[in-house]
Amino acid sequence: MIIENISPYIFEIGPFAVRWYGLMFAISVLTGFYYMRRHGIKKGFNEDVIFTLFMVVLVSLIVGARLVYVIVNWPHYAANPELIIRIDHGGLAFHGGLLGGILSSWIYCHLKKLSWHSLADLAVPGVATGIALVRIANIFNQEIIGREAAMFFFERHPTQVYGSLIGIVLLLFHNYLARRGETKPGYLFWNFVLGYTLLRGLIEETFRENPLIAWGYVSETWGAGFFTTVHLFTPAILALCAVMLWRIRHS
Image (cartoon, rainbow, N blue to C red; front, side, top):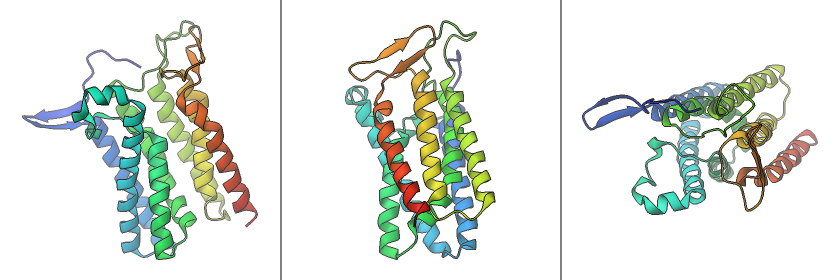
C-alpha cells in the first residue's frame, strides 16, 4: 500500500534518527532471543551456548539477507554504493537470511556437537515475529509495494499487510504444533519454512510489484503477476522441505 506523506522515522533529534524499520527489527531480535533462551534452557542447552549461537546466526542472517537483496537489486546499488550497508533503510531478502542462518548455525552446532534441528525449532517464533513486524515497517519505508488491481476497491494490493499476516498465521500454526507435543527435532522448523515458502510464493510474491524473469504474465484486472525470481526458486525450496520432513518422520 502507498500512504502519502508517511515518514519512515519515529523521531529525529539533530543527526540522530530512529526509524520504524530499525525498531521493528530490534523487537523481533529481542523476541527471538527471549524465546530461544527460555525454552533452550528448559531443553538442557547451556545459556552461553545459546547466546553465542544466537549472535552467530544474527550476524550471518543479516549479511546473507543484505547480500542477496543487493545482488538482486544491483543496478540501484551500483549507482548508490553508499547505501549498500544502510540496512536501516530496509532491504533484507528472507531467503538470503535463511541460507546464511542455516549454514552458520549448522557449522556452529557441528563443531559444538549440538542438535541443530532442536535449536532450529527454537528459532521459529522469532523469525515469524520478525516477518510480521518488518512487513509493517515496510509500509513506513514505502517498499514491498503491491501491484495495481482494477477489480478491487483499493488501488493496489496491500502486500505489506499480506506479508505481515503470513507471519502471524505461521506463528499461530507453530504454536499449535508445539502445544501438540511429540514432534521430532526439526519438524517445527521445516514446517515453518515450507509454510512461508508456499504462502510467500502464492500470495505476497504474486501480488507484489516485482520485475518478472525474462518471460511471464501480469493481469491488470487481478493485479497478479508471475514469474519472479522467488517464484522460480519456490519449487526447489518446497522439495527440500518435503525431503527434510520425510526424513524426520522416518528417523
